[in-house]
Length: 135
Ligand SMILES: [Fe+2]
Ligand SMILES: [Fe+2]
Image (cartoon, rainbow, N blue to C red; front, side, top):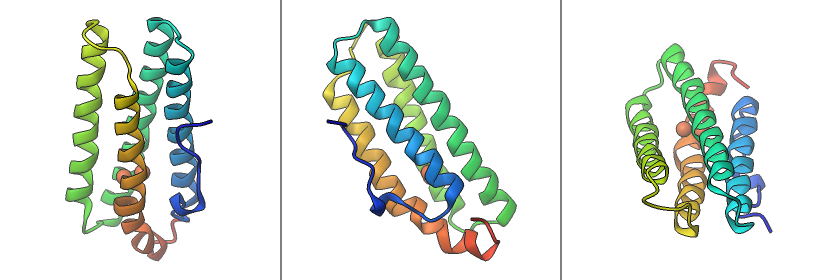
């Protein structure tokens, strides 16, 4: 069973970002599966890297549109993105230094963060983006 089951309630209606979010969910599930299967650190590290890279790609895409459309809540939203990037970078550093493994706790944190962020913060930009014809 996947850690996160994609659900309609996670959809924003902005197609490009719904696709990004599904990919992020897939990557978190992939990391969870690798952890549960007892995969070695090199596999965990590569999935973790993939998740970090895709997260950054996705955040940049949202932030680029915030800028282009002068989104009023951009600053708060960007701060949330930055906080997650900082947290994940810190986890990755500890993992690389062998100070910690990827645990259920790490995965639960990522799951809660993503589902809350999508449902609260990302859904907040939907009407604004639609006004600009962004689908
Ligand atoms: Fe997002
Ligand atoms: Fe976001």
